[in-house]
Amino acid sequence: MGIEEPRTINEMFQKAVRQRAGAALMSFKRDKKWFDITGKELLERVSNLAVGLHKLGVKPGDRIALLAESSPDWSITDYAILSNSAVNVPIYPTQALDQVEFILKNSGARILFISTNRQLKRIKSVLDNYKNSERPLVYLFEEPKDATVSHIGEIEKQGAQELRNTPELFERISSLSQPSDLATIIYTSGTTGIPKGVMLTHHNLTSNALRSGEVFDLQDGDQAMSFLPLSHVFERTVLYIYMWYGVKVSFAKGVETVAEDIKEIRPTIVTAVPRLFEKIYATINKKASDATPLQQKIFHRAMKVGRQVAGYIDRQERVPLKLSLEYKVLDRLVFSKWKEAVGGRIRFFVSGGAALPSEIAYIFLGAGIQILQGYGLTETSPVVSFNRPDSNRIGTIGKTIPGVKVRVAEDGEILVQGDNVMQGYYQLPEESAQVLQEYADGIWFHTGDIGTMDKEGYIRITDRKKDLMKTSLGKYIAPQPIENMIRSIPMVEQVIVIGNARKYPSALIVPTFDALVSYARSLKIDTDNPAELVRHPRVIEYFKKKIDEVTKDLAPHEKVKKIALLDQEFSVEGGELTPTLKVRRKYVEDKHKDTINSLYPKYDAEMN
Image (tube, rainbow, N blue to C red; front, side, top):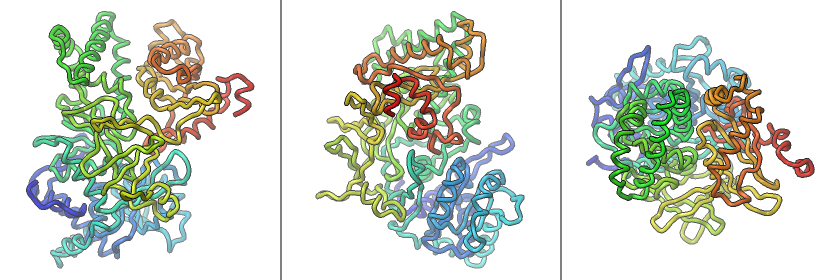
Protein backbone atom coordinates (compact mmCIF):
# COMPACT_ATOMS: atom_id res chain seq x y z
CA MET A 1 0.00 0.00 0.00
CA GLY A 2 3.01 2.28 0.17
CA ILE A 3 2.49 3.03 3.85
CA GLU A 4 4.12 1.66 6.97
CA GLU A 5 2.93 -1.84 7.80
CA PRO A 6 0.46 -1.92 10.71
CA ARG A 7 1.32 -3.74 13.94
CA THR A 8 -2.20 -4.06 15.34
CA ILE A 9 -5.69 -4.54 13.93
CA ASN A 10 -6.44 -0.98 15.13
CA GLU A 11 -3.64 0.46 12.99
CA MET A 12 -4.68 -1.70 10.05
CA PHE A 13 -8.28 -0.48 10.23
CA GLN A 14 -7.51 3.21 10.72
CA LYS A 15 -4.88 3.43 7.99
CA ALA A 16 -7.20 1.66 5.54
CA VAL A 17 -10.32 3.78 6.17
CA ARG A 18 -8.43 7.08 6.30
CA GLN A 19 -6.76 6.35 2.97
CA ARG A 20 -10.11 5.41 1.38
CA ALA A 21 -12.45 7.75 3.22
CA GLY A 22 -14.74 8.29 0.22
CA ALA A 23 -14.72 4.73 -1.11
CA ALA A 24 -17.48 2.20 -0.42
CA LEU A 25 -15.82 -0.53 1.66
CA MET A 26 -18.92 -2.45 2.76
CA SER A 27 -22.52 -2.87 1.65
CA PHE A 28 -25.59 -4.56 3.06
CA LYS A 29 -29.15 -5.29 1.96
CA ARG A 30 -32.25 -3.93 3.65
CA ASP A 31 -35.80 -4.01 2.28
CA LYS A 32 -34.49 -5.37 -1.04
CA LYS A 33 -32.09 -2.41 -1.50
CA TRP A 34 -28.30 -2.32 -1.19
CA PHE A 35 -26.66 0.37 0.94
CA ASP A 36 -22.97 1.31 0.83
CA ILE A 37 -20.79 2.24 3.81
CA THR A 38 -17.76 4.41 3.05
CA GLY A 39 -14.43 4.44 4.84
CA LYS A 40 -15.37 7.74 6.49
CA GLU A 41 -18.68 6.31 7.76
CA LEU A 42 -16.98 3.19 9.10
CA LEU A 43 -14.41 5.27 10.97
CA GLU A 44 -17.15 7.44 12.47
CA ARG A 45 -19.19 4.48 13.70
CA VAL A 46 -16.19 2.60 15.08
CA SER A 47 -14.92 5.78 16.79
CA ASN A 48 -18.30 6.49 18.39
CA LEU A 49 -18.79 2.92 19.57
CA ALA A 50 -15.22 2.56 20.84
CA VAL A 51 -15.37 5.79 22.85
CA GLY A 52 -18.85 4.86 24.08
CA LEU A 53 -17.45 1.57 25.38
CA HIS A 54 -14.62 3.49 27.02
CA LYS A 55 -17.22 5.70 28.74
CA LEU A 56 -18.97 2.53 29.95
CA GLY A 57 -15.79 1.63 31.79
CA VAL A 58 -14.35 -0.94 29.38
CA LYS A 59 -10.67 -1.48 30.17
CA PRO A 60 -7.81 -3.22 28.35
CA GLY A 61 -8.18 -6.98 28.66
CA ASP A 62 -11.93 -6.91 29.37
CA ARG A 63 -13.79 -9.66 27.54
CA ILE A 64 -16.75 -8.61 25.39
CA ALA A 65 -18.91 -11.28 23.75
CA LEU A 66 -20.47 -10.95 20.32
CA LEU A 67 -23.36 -13.25 19.38
CA ALA A 68 -24.57 -12.19 15.95
CA GLU A 69 -24.90 -13.12 12.31
CA SER A 70 -22.33 -11.69 9.91
CA SER A 71 -23.00 -8.07 8.97
CA PRO A 72 -21.30 -4.65 8.95
CA ASP A 73 -22.46 -4.29 12.57
CA TRP A 74 -20.41 -7.35 13.50
CA SER A 75 -17.25 -5.89 11.96
CA ILE A 76 -17.85 -2.42 13.40
CA THR A 77 -18.33 -3.87 16.88
CA ASP A 78 -15.21 -6.01 16.48
CA TYR A 79 -13.06 -2.99 15.55
CA ALA A 80 -14.55 -0.95 18.42
CA ILE A 81 -13.80 -3.69 20.97
CA LEU A 82 -10.21 -4.03 19.78
CA SER A 83 -9.77 -0.24 19.77
CA ASN A 84 -10.19 -0.39 23.56
CA SER A 85 -7.53 -3.12 23.86
CA ALA A 86 -10.44 -5.30 24.98
CA VAL A 87 -10.94 -8.91 23.90
CA ASN A 88 -13.60 -10.00 21.40
CA VAL A 89 -15.25 -13.31 22.36
CA PRO A 90 -17.34 -14.38 19.33
CA ILE A 91 -20.24 -16.81 19.75
CA TYR A 92 -21.96 -18.55 16.84
CA PRO A 93 -25.65 -17.64 16.44
CA THR A 94 -26.29 -21.39 16.08
CA GLN A 95 -24.26 -22.39 19.16
CA ALA A 96 -26.02 -24.76 21.58
CA LEU A 97 -27.25 -23.04 24.76
CA ASP A 98 -25.01 -25.03 27.09
CA GLN A 99 -22.00 -23.91 25.03
CA VAL A 100 -23.20 -20.28 24.98
CA GLU A 101 -23.41 -20.36 28.78
CA PHE A 102 -20.00 -22.01 29.09
CA ILE A 103 -18.33 -19.44 26.81
CA LEU A 104 -19.90 -16.44 28.57
CA LYS A 105 -18.98 -17.69 32.03
CA ASN A 106 -15.58 -19.16 31.20
CA SER A 107 -14.47 -15.96 29.46
CA GLY A 108 -15.99 -13.72 32.13
CA ALA A 109 -17.62 -11.51 29.49
CA ARG A 110 -18.64 -8.10 30.89
CA ILE A 111 -20.74 -7.06 27.90
CA LEU A 112 -22.73 -9.13 25.40
CA PHE A 113 -23.74 -7.82 21.98
CA ILE A 114 -26.64 -9.70 20.35
CA SER A 115 -27.97 -9.25 16.82
CA THR A 116 -31.74 -9.65 17.20
CA ASN A 117 -34.64 -9.97 19.61
CA ARG A 118 -35.06 -13.51 18.34
CA GLN A 119 -31.52 -14.41 19.39
CA LEU A 120 -32.06 -12.68 22.75
CA LYS A 121 -35.17 -14.78 23.33
CA ARG A 122 -33.27 -17.94 22.37
CA ILE A 123 -30.58 -17.41 25.01
CA LYS A 124 -32.86 -15.91 27.70
CA SER A 125 -32.52 -19.03 29.87
CA VAL A 126 -28.72 -18.61 29.81
CA LEU A 127 -28.94 -15.01 31.01
CA ASP A 128 -31.51 -15.96 33.64
CA ASN A 129 -28.96 -18.34 35.18
CA TYR A 130 -26.78 -15.38 36.18
CA LYS A 131 -26.92 -13.58 39.49
CA ASN A 132 -27.78 -9.95 38.72
CA SER A 133 -24.36 -8.71 39.83
CA GLU A 134 -22.54 -11.10 37.47
CA ARG A 135 -24.80 -10.86 34.41
CA PRO A 136 -23.17 -9.10 31.45
CA LEU A 137 -24.63 -5.87 30.10
CA VAL A 138 -26.66 -6.76 27.00
CA TYR A 139 -26.94 -4.60 23.86
CA LEU A 140 -28.86 -5.38 20.68
CA PHE A 141 -28.12 -4.44 17.07
CA GLU A 142 -31.87 -3.91 16.53
CA GLU A 143 -34.42 -2.04 18.62
CA PRO A 144 -34.97 -4.18 21.75
CA LYS A 145 -38.40 -5.34 22.88
CA ASP A 146 -37.05 -6.25 26.33
CA ALA A 147 -36.71 -3.33 28.76
CA THR A 148 -33.74 -4.98 30.50
CA VAL A 149 -31.49 -4.60 27.45
CA SER A 150 -30.37 -1.58 25.43
CA HIS A 151 -29.70 -0.68 21.81
CA ILE A 152 -26.11 -0.43 20.53
CA GLY A 153 -26.98 3.07 19.29
CA GLU A 154 -27.07 4.31 22.88
CA ILE A 155 -23.37 3.54 23.29
CA GLU A 156 -22.61 5.21 19.96
CA LYS A 157 -24.51 8.37 21.00
CA GLN A 158 -22.52 8.59 24.23
CA GLY A 159 -19.32 8.13 22.26
CA ALA A 160 -20.26 10.81 19.72
CA GLN A 161 -21.03 13.28 22.53
CA GLU A 162 -17.70 12.56 24.22
CA LEU A 163 -15.80 12.98 20.94
CA ARG A 164 -17.35 16.41 20.43
CA ASN A 165 -15.78 17.40 23.75
CA THR A 166 -12.53 15.44 23.34
CA PRO A 167 -11.90 14.87 19.59
CA GLU A 168 -8.56 13.12 20.11
CA LEU A 169 -9.91 10.50 22.57
CA PHE A 170 -10.44 7.71 20.01
CA GLU A 171 -6.90 7.93 18.68
CA ARG A 172 -5.55 8.11 22.21
CA ILE A 173 -7.27 4.94 23.46
CA SER A 174 -6.83 2.94 20.25
CA SER A 175 -3.09 3.71 20.09
CA LEU A 176 -2.57 2.03 23.47
CA SER A 177 -2.99 -1.45 21.97
CA GLN A 178 0.24 -3.40 21.58
CA PRO A 179 0.96 -6.25 19.13
CA SER A 180 1.28 -8.65 22.09
CA ASP A 181 -2.15 -7.71 23.50
CA LEU A 182 -4.83 -10.36 23.43
CA ALA A 183 -7.34 -9.51 20.68
CA THR A 184 -9.74 -12.41 20.79
CA ILE A 185 -10.65 -15.66 22.50
CA ILE A 186 -12.31 -17.96 20.00
CA TYR A 187 -13.88 -21.06 21.45
CA THR A 188 -13.42 -24.04 19.16
CA SER A 189 -16.67 -25.94 19.08
CA GLY A 190 -14.82 -29.23 18.89
CA THR A 191 -16.20 -32.55 17.72
CA THR A 192 -15.58 -33.90 21.23
CA GLY A 193 -15.40 -32.44 24.72
CA ILE A 194 -16.03 -28.92 25.99
CA PRO A 195 -15.03 -25.84 23.95
CA LYS A 196 -11.46 -24.58 24.30
CA GLY A 197 -10.76 -20.85 24.13
CA VAL A 198 -8.04 -20.11 21.56
CA MET A 199 -6.11 -16.96 22.52
CA LEU A 200 -4.97 -14.83 19.56
CA THR A 201 -3.11 -11.53 19.83
CA HIS A 202 -3.17 -8.49 17.56
CA HIS A 203 0.17 -9.71 16.18
CA ASN A 204 -1.23 -13.18 15.43
CA LEU A 205 -4.14 -11.73 13.44
CA THR A 206 -2.30 -8.84 11.79
CA SER A 207 0.66 -10.93 10.62
CA ASN A 208 -1.65 -13.61 9.23
CA ALA A 209 -3.81 -11.10 7.36
CA LEU A 210 -0.82 -9.26 5.90
CA ARG A 211 1.11 -12.37 4.86
CA SER A 212 -2.00 -14.01 3.37
CA GLY A 213 -2.78 -10.80 1.49
CA GLU A 214 0.65 -10.88 -0.16
CA VAL A 215 -0.28 -14.00 -2.13
CA PHE A 216 -4.05 -13.50 -2.38
CA ASP A 217 -3.80 -11.78 -5.78
CA LEU A 218 -6.24 -8.98 -4.95
CA GLN A 219 -6.75 -6.47 -7.77
CA ASP A 220 -8.23 -3.01 -8.21
CA GLY A 221 -11.93 -3.38 -8.81
CA ASP A 222 -12.27 -6.66 -6.92
CA GLN A 223 -15.63 -7.11 -5.22
CA ALA A 224 -16.13 -9.67 -2.45
CA MET A 225 -19.23 -11.33 -1.05
CA SER A 226 -19.35 -12.48 2.58
CA PHE A 227 -21.79 -15.03 3.94
CA LEU A 228 -19.72 -17.27 6.24
CA PRO A 229 -19.97 -16.61 9.99
CA LEU A 230 -17.53 -13.99 11.26
CA SER A 231 -17.48 -15.97 14.50
CA HIS A 232 -15.12 -18.24 12.55
CA VAL A 233 -11.60 -16.83 12.30
CA PHE A 234 -11.37 -17.77 8.60
CA GLU A 235 -13.94 -15.24 7.39
CA ARG A 236 -12.89 -12.69 10.00
CA THR A 237 -9.26 -12.71 8.87
CA VAL A 238 -10.36 -12.55 5.23
CA LEU A 239 -12.34 -9.38 6.05
CA TYR A 240 -9.24 -7.86 7.66
CA ILE A 241 -7.42 -8.58 4.37
CA TYR A 242 -10.19 -6.98 2.31
CA MET A 243 -10.17 -3.91 4.56
CA TRP A 244 -6.42 -3.45 4.20
CA TYR A 245 -6.52 -3.79 0.42
CA GLY A 246 -9.67 -1.72 -0.06
CA VAL A 247 -11.79 -4.54 -1.46
CA LYS A 248 -15.49 -3.78 -1.08
CA VAL A 249 -17.35 -6.47 0.87
CA SER A 250 -21.07 -7.04 0.35
CA PHE A 251 -22.79 -9.08 3.03
CA ALA A 252 -25.31 -11.68 1.89
CA LYS A 253 -28.45 -11.59 3.99
CA GLY A 254 -27.81 -15.21 5.01
CA VAL A 255 -26.86 -18.64 3.71
CA GLU A 256 -30.41 -19.12 2.42
CA THR A 257 -30.16 -15.99 0.21
CA VAL A 258 -26.69 -16.63 -1.26
CA ALA A 259 -28.03 -17.83 -4.64
CA GLU A 260 -30.06 -14.62 -5.05
CA ASP A 261 -27.51 -12.22 -3.53
CA ILE A 262 -24.55 -13.46 -5.56
CA LYS A 263 -26.35 -12.51 -8.79
CA GLU A 264 -26.98 -8.99 -7.48
CA ILE A 265 -23.53 -8.45 -5.95
CA ARG A 266 -21.67 -9.98 -8.94
CA PRO A 267 -18.51 -10.62 -6.88
CA THR A 268 -15.08 -11.43 -8.24
CA ILE A 269 -14.01 -13.28 -5.06
CA VAL A 270 -16.00 -15.37 -2.60
CA THR A 271 -14.77 -17.34 0.39
CA ALA A 272 -16.84 -20.45 1.00
CA VAL A 273 -16.89 -23.95 2.43
CA PRO A 274 -17.06 -27.20 0.42
CA ARG A 275 -20.71 -27.63 1.40
CA LEU A 276 -21.66 -24.68 -0.85
CA PHE A 277 -20.05 -26.23 -3.94
CA GLU A 278 -21.58 -29.63 -3.19
CA LYS A 279 -25.03 -28.02 -2.92
CA ILE A 280 -24.55 -26.04 -6.16
CA TYR A 281 -23.48 -29.22 -7.96
CA ALA A 282 -26.45 -31.16 -6.54
CA THR A 283 -28.83 -28.40 -7.70
CA ILE A 284 -27.32 -28.41 -11.20
CA ASN A 285 -27.64 -32.20 -11.42
CA LYS A 286 -31.24 -32.04 -10.24
CA LYS A 287 -32.07 -29.54 -13.02
CA ALA A 288 -30.28 -31.72 -15.56
CA SER A 289 -32.21 -34.82 -14.49
CA ASP A 290 -35.49 -32.94 -15.07
CA ALA A 291 -34.43 -31.74 -18.55
CA THR A 292 -35.30 -33.19 -21.97
CA PRO A 293 -33.31 -36.20 -23.26
CA LEU A 294 -31.39 -33.97 -25.70
CA GLN A 295 -30.53 -31.45 -22.99
CA GLN A 296 -29.40 -34.29 -20.73
CA LYS A 297 -27.16 -35.63 -23.48
CA ILE A 298 -25.55 -32.20 -23.99
CA PHE A 299 -25.13 -31.77 -20.22
CA HIS A 300 -23.39 -35.12 -19.74
CA ARG A 301 -21.12 -34.47 -22.73
CA ALA A 302 -20.22 -31.06 -21.28
CA MET A 303 -19.38 -32.68 -17.95
CA LYS A 304 -17.12 -35.21 -19.62
CA VAL A 305 -15.34 -32.67 -21.82
CA GLY A 306 -15.05 -30.16 -18.97
CA ARG A 307 -13.48 -32.81 -16.75
CA GLN A 308 -10.91 -33.62 -19.45
CA VAL A 309 -10.06 -29.94 -19.94
CA ALA A 310 -9.72 -29.49 -16.17
CA GLY A 311 -7.21 -32.34 -16.08
CA TYR A 312 -5.02 -30.61 -18.67
CA ILE A 313 -5.25 -27.29 -16.82
CA ASP A 314 -4.39 -28.91 -13.49
CA ARG A 315 -1.35 -30.62 -15.02
CA GLN A 316 -0.42 -27.30 -16.66
CA GLU A 317 -0.54 -28.92 -20.08
CA ARG A 318 -1.88 -27.52 -23.34
CA VAL A 319 -5.46 -28.54 -24.17
CA PRO A 320 -5.57 -30.37 -27.57
CA LEU A 321 -7.13 -28.26 -30.33
CA LYS A 322 -10.03 -30.63 -31.08
CA LEU A 323 -10.97 -30.83 -27.39
CA SER A 324 -10.60 -27.07 -27.03
CA LEU A 325 -12.99 -26.38 -29.93
CA GLU A 326 -15.62 -28.77 -28.57
CA TYR A 327 -15.23 -27.22 -25.13
CA LYS A 328 -15.90 -23.71 -26.49
CA VAL A 329 -19.22 -24.86 -27.94
CA LEU A 330 -20.25 -26.64 -24.73
CA ASP A 331 -19.11 -23.68 -22.65
CA ARG A 332 -21.61 -21.46 -24.49
CA LEU A 333 -24.38 -24.05 -24.20
CA VAL A 334 -23.85 -25.19 -20.60
CA PHE A 335 -21.08 -23.63 -18.53
CA SER A 336 -21.93 -20.01 -19.35
CA LYS A 337 -25.13 -20.56 -17.35
CA TRP A 338 -23.11 -21.82 -14.37
CA LYS A 339 -20.94 -18.71 -14.43
CA GLU A 340 -23.97 -16.46 -14.74
CA ALA A 341 -25.54 -18.20 -11.72
CA VAL A 342 -22.58 -17.06 -9.58
CA GLY A 343 -22.73 -13.49 -10.84
CA GLY A 344 -20.78 -13.76 -14.08
CA ARG A 345 -17.59 -12.09 -12.80
CA ILE A 346 -15.99 -14.67 -10.47
CA ARG A 347 -12.20 -14.79 -10.70
CA PHE A 348 -11.98 -17.50 -8.05
CA PHE A 349 -13.57 -18.99 -4.97
CA VAL A 350 -11.48 -19.71 -1.88
CA SER A 351 -12.53 -22.87 -0.06
CA GLY A 352 -11.67 -23.53 3.57
CA GLY A 353 -13.01 -25.01 6.78
CA ALA A 354 -13.06 -28.61 5.52
CA ALA A 355 -11.62 -30.80 2.78
CA LEU A 356 -12.85 -30.04 -0.73
CA PRO A 357 -13.56 -33.24 -2.72
CA SER A 358 -11.15 -33.24 -5.66
CA GLU A 359 -13.84 -34.30 -8.11
CA ILE A 360 -15.92 -31.25 -7.19
CA ALA A 361 -12.88 -29.01 -7.81
CA TYR A 362 -12.31 -30.63 -11.23
CA ILE A 363 -15.97 -30.24 -12.20
CA PHE A 364 -16.00 -26.53 -11.37
CA LEU A 365 -12.63 -25.93 -13.03
CA GLY A 366 -14.02 -27.64 -16.12
CA ALA A 367 -16.87 -25.13 -16.01
CA GLY A 368 -14.37 -22.26 -15.93
CA ILE A 369 -14.80 -21.60 -12.20
CA GLN A 370 -11.60 -21.93 -10.20
CA ILE A 371 -11.76 -23.02 -6.53
CA LEU A 372 -8.60 -22.43 -4.51
CA GLN A 373 -8.39 -24.74 -1.51
CA GLY A 374 -6.64 -23.48 1.60
CA TYR A 375 -5.84 -24.82 5.03
CA GLY A 376 -5.78 -23.42 8.49
CA LEU A 377 -6.97 -23.79 12.05
CA THR A 378 -8.36 -21.42 14.65
CA GLU A 379 -5.08 -21.95 16.51
CA THR A 380 -3.11 -20.58 13.53
CA SER A 381 -5.14 -17.37 13.00
CA PRO A 382 -6.06 -19.33 10.70
CA VAL A 383 -4.19 -19.44 7.37
CA VAL A 384 -1.31 -21.89 7.05
CA SER A 385 -1.37 -22.49 3.30
CA PHE A 386 -3.47 -22.10 0.19
CA ASN A 387 -3.34 -22.53 -3.55
CA ARG A 388 -2.53 -19.44 -5.60
CA PRO A 389 -4.63 -18.50 -8.64
CA ASP A 390 -1.64 -19.00 -10.96
CA SER A 391 -0.48 -22.28 -9.37
CA ASN A 392 -3.55 -24.15 -8.20
CA ARG A 393 -3.00 -27.86 -7.67
CA ILE A 394 -6.23 -29.76 -7.08
CA GLY A 395 -6.17 -32.25 -4.21
CA THR A 396 -3.67 -30.18 -2.23
CA ILE A 397 -4.03 -27.30 0.22
CA GLY A 398 -1.32 -25.38 -1.62
CA LYS A 399 1.93 -24.00 -0.24
CA THR A 400 2.53 -22.20 3.04
CA ILE A 401 2.08 -18.43 3.14
CA PRO A 402 5.19 -16.28 3.82
CA GLY A 403 6.42 -16.44 7.42
CA VAL A 404 4.75 -19.78 8.19
CA LYS A 405 6.71 -23.03 8.40
CA VAL A 406 5.31 -26.55 8.14
CA ARG A 407 6.97 -29.86 8.74
CA VAL A 408 5.69 -33.42 8.86
CA ALA A 409 6.44 -35.36 12.04
CA GLU A 410 7.54 -39.01 11.97
CA ASP A 411 3.97 -40.16 12.60
CA GLY A 412 2.70 -38.02 9.71
CA GLU A 413 1.26 -35.19 11.83
CA ILE A 414 1.46 -31.69 10.36
CA LEU A 415 3.35 -29.25 12.63
CA VAL A 416 3.19 -25.46 12.21
CA GLN A 417 5.50 -22.66 13.34
CA GLY A 418 5.08 -18.92 12.79
CA ASP A 419 3.80 -15.58 14.07
CA ASN A 420 0.27 -16.83 13.43
CA VAL A 421 0.39 -19.57 16.10
CA MET A 422 -1.85 -18.95 19.13
CA GLN A 423 -0.70 -18.09 22.64
CA GLY A 424 -2.51 -21.12 24.05
CA TYR A 425 -5.93 -22.19 25.30
CA TYR A 426 -7.56 -19.85 27.81
CA GLN A 427 -7.04 -21.12 31.39
CA LEU A 428 -5.96 -24.54 30.09
CA PRO A 429 -2.16 -24.74 30.55
CA GLU A 430 -1.96 -28.54 30.29
CA GLU A 431 -3.97 -28.70 27.05
CA SER A 432 -1.86 -25.84 25.68
CA ALA A 433 1.38 -27.67 26.49
CA GLN A 434 0.13 -30.77 24.66
CA VAL A 435 -0.16 -28.95 21.33
CA LEU A 436 2.52 -26.25 21.73
CA GLN A 437 5.70 -28.30 22.07
CA GLU A 438 9.24 -26.99 22.25
CA TYR A 439 11.98 -28.41 20.05
CA ALA A 440 15.59 -27.39 19.40
CA ASP A 441 14.40 -24.96 16.70
CA GLY A 442 11.58 -23.41 18.72
CA ILE A 443 7.93 -24.06 19.53
CA TRP A 444 5.82 -25.99 17.03
CA PHE A 445 2.05 -26.34 17.04
CA HIS A 446 0.71 -29.89 16.66
CA THR A 447 -2.30 -29.59 14.34
CA GLY A 448 -3.72 -33.08 14.85
CA ASP A 449 -3.91 -33.42 11.05
CA ILE A 450 -2.12 -36.15 9.13
CA GLY A 451 -0.57 -35.20 5.81
CA THR A 452 2.35 -35.05 3.39
CA MET A 453 4.40 -32.35 1.67
CA ASP A 454 6.00 -32.85 -1.75
CA LYS A 455 9.31 -31.50 -3.04
CA GLU A 456 7.62 -28.38 -4.46
CA GLY A 457 6.05 -27.57 -1.09
CA TYR A 458 2.46 -28.58 -1.88
CA ILE A 459 0.73 -30.03 1.17
CA ARG A 460 -1.92 -32.73 1.30
CA ILE A 461 -4.07 -33.49 4.33
CA THR A 462 -5.21 -37.09 4.50
CA ASP A 463 -7.16 -37.10 7.78
CA ARG A 464 -7.49 -36.05 11.38
CA LYS A 465 -5.12 -38.02 13.60
CA LYS A 466 -7.93 -38.88 16.00
CA ASP A 467 -10.23 -39.99 13.14
CA LEU A 468 -7.90 -42.68 11.78
CA MET A 469 -9.62 -46.05 12.10
CA LYS A 470 -8.12 -49.47 12.71
CA THR A 471 -10.19 -52.43 11.58
CA SER A 472 -10.53 -55.57 13.67
CA LEU A 473 -8.11 -57.15 11.17
CA GLY A 474 -5.43 -54.56 12.04
CA LYS A 475 -5.67 -52.47 8.86
CA TYR A 476 -5.61 -48.64 9.14
CA ILE A 477 -8.19 -46.56 7.28
CA ALA A 478 -8.35 -42.77 6.81
CA PRO A 479 -12.10 -42.03 6.48
CA GLN A 480 -11.97 -38.49 5.05
CA PRO A 481 -10.53 -39.33 1.59
CA ILE A 482 -13.18 -42.05 1.23
CA GLU A 483 -15.92 -39.65 2.35
CA ASN A 484 -14.71 -37.05 -0.15
CA MET A 485 -14.98 -39.58 -2.97
CA ILE A 486 -18.51 -40.54 -1.92
CA ARG A 487 -19.56 -36.88 -1.55
CA SER A 488 -18.70 -36.32 -5.22
CA ILE A 489 -21.72 -38.49 -6.12
CA PRO A 490 -24.45 -35.98 -7.12
CA MET A 491 -27.21 -37.49 -4.96
CA VAL A 492 -25.08 -37.68 -1.79
CA GLU A 493 -25.75 -34.83 0.62
CA GLN A 494 -23.72 -36.05 3.63
CA VAL A 495 -21.70 -39.13 4.52
CA ILE A 496 -19.77 -40.64 7.40
CA VAL A 497 -17.59 -43.74 7.08
CA ILE A 498 -17.60 -46.22 9.98
CA GLY A 499 -15.04 -48.96 10.59
CA ASN A 500 -13.03 -48.62 13.77
CA ALA A 501 -12.61 -52.06 15.41
CA ARG A 502 -14.92 -53.52 12.73
CA LYS A 503 -14.11 -56.06 10.02
CA TYR A 504 -14.67 -53.62 7.17
CA PRO A 505 -15.76 -50.03 6.52
CA SER A 506 -19.41 -49.13 6.09
CA ALA A 507 -21.09 -45.79 5.45
CA LEU A 508 -24.06 -43.79 6.68
CA ILE A 509 -25.39 -41.62 3.86
CA VAL A 510 -27.87 -38.76 3.78
CA PRO A 511 -29.21 -38.44 0.21
CA THR A 512 -30.12 -35.21 -1.56
CA PHE A 513 -33.86 -35.80 -1.28
CA ASP A 514 -35.08 -33.52 -4.11
CA ALA A 515 -32.86 -35.36 -6.57
CA LEU A 516 -33.71 -38.73 -5.02
CA VAL A 517 -37.45 -38.14 -5.46
CA SER A 518 -36.90 -37.38 -9.17
CA TYR A 519 -34.76 -40.50 -9.55
CA ALA A 520 -37.36 -42.63 -7.75
CA ARG A 521 -40.06 -41.40 -10.13
CA SER A 522 -37.90 -42.41 -13.10
CA LEU A 523 -37.81 -45.92 -11.59
CA LYS A 524 -41.61 -45.84 -11.11
CA ILE A 525 -41.18 -46.00 -7.33
CA ASP A 526 -44.51 -44.79 -6.03
CA THR A 527 -43.49 -42.74 -2.98
CA ASP A 528 -41.76 -39.49 -2.14
CA ASN A 529 -41.58 -40.26 1.58
CA PRO A 530 -37.90 -40.01 2.68
CA ALA A 531 -38.26 -42.75 5.31
CA GLU A 532 -39.61 -45.15 2.67
CA LEU A 533 -37.17 -44.12 -0.05
CA VAL A 534 -34.05 -44.73 2.05
CA ARG A 535 -35.18 -48.31 2.70
CA HIS A 536 -36.13 -49.13 -0.89
CA PRO A 537 -33.84 -51.90 -2.26
CA ARG A 538 -33.42 -50.25 -5.69
CA VAL A 539 -32.41 -46.95 -4.10
CA ILE A 540 -29.87 -48.66 -1.83
CA GLU A 541 -28.58 -50.64 -4.83
CA TYR A 542 -28.08 -47.39 -6.81
CA PHE A 543 -26.00 -45.76 -4.08
CA LYS A 544 -23.90 -48.89 -3.50
CA LYS A 545 -23.17 -49.14 -7.22
CA LYS A 546 -22.13 -45.47 -7.41
CA ILE A 547 -19.91 -45.84 -4.33
CA ASP A 548 -18.22 -48.88 -5.86
CA GLU A 549 -17.53 -46.83 -9.01
CA VAL A 550 -15.96 -43.79 -7.31
CA THR A 551 -13.89 -45.92 -4.88
CA LYS A 552 -12.73 -48.56 -7.37
CA ASP A 553 -9.06 -47.58 -6.99
CA LEU A 554 -8.98 -47.97 -3.21
CA ALA A 555 -7.20 -50.86 -1.50
CA PRO A 556 -9.55 -53.78 -0.71
CA HIS A 557 -9.58 -53.08 3.04
CA GLU A 558 -10.60 -49.43 2.37
CA LYS A 559 -13.64 -50.22 0.24
CA VAL A 560 -17.07 -49.63 1.74
CA LYS A 561 -18.79 -53.01 1.98
CA LYS A 562 -22.23 -51.96 3.27
CA ILE A 563 -24.27 -48.77 3.50
CA ALA A 564 -27.31 -47.40 5.29
CA LEU A 565 -29.31 -44.41 4.05
CA LEU A 566 -30.66 -41.95 6.63
CA ASP A 567 -33.87 -39.95 6.22
CA GLN A 568 -32.75 -36.99 8.37
CA GLU A 569 -30.02 -34.51 7.44
CA PHE A 570 -27.13 -33.96 9.88
CA SER A 571 -27.56 -30.53 11.46
CA VAL A 572 -26.20 -28.23 14.15
CA GLU A 573 -29.60 -28.27 15.85
CA GLY A 574 -29.69 -32.06 15.80
CA GLY A 575 -26.26 -32.24 17.41
CA GLU A 576 -24.54 -34.07 14.53
CA LEU A 577 -22.62 -30.99 13.32
CA THR A 578 -20.48 -28.40 15.07
CA PRO A 579 -21.22 -24.70 14.36
CA THR A 580 -18.50 -24.88 11.68
CA LEU A 581 -20.40 -27.80 10.06
CA LYS A 582 -17.89 -30.50 10.99
CA VAL A 583 -19.39 -33.90 11.75
CA ARG A 584 -19.31 -34.96 15.39
CA ARG A 585 -18.43 -38.57 14.62
CA LYS A 586 -18.87 -40.00 18.10
CA TYR A 587 -22.29 -38.37 18.46
CA VAL A 588 -23.44 -39.68 15.07
CA GLU A 589 -22.15 -43.18 15.82
CA ASP A 590 -23.92 -43.22 19.19
CA LYS A 591 -27.16 -41.85 17.73
CA HIS A 592 -27.23 -44.43 14.93
CA LYS A 593 -25.67 -47.33 16.85
CA ASP A 594 -28.47 -49.79 16.00
CA THR A 595 -28.33 -48.90 12.30
CA ILE A 596 -24.54 -49.32 12.27
CA ASN A 597 -24.71 -52.66 14.07
CA SER A 598 -27.19 -53.89 11.47
CA LEU A 599 -24.46 -53.51 8.84
CA TYR A 600 -22.24 -56.07 10.56
CA PRO A 601 -22.68 -59.75 11.48
CA LYS A 602 -24.25 -60.20 14.90
CA TYR A 603 -21.10 -61.47 16.59
CA ASP A 604 -19.12 -58.51 15.24
CA ALA A 605 -21.77 -55.98 16.35
CA GLU A 606 -21.87 -57.42 19.85
CA MET A 607 -18.16 -56.66 20.26
CA ASN A 608 -18.98 -52.96 19.78
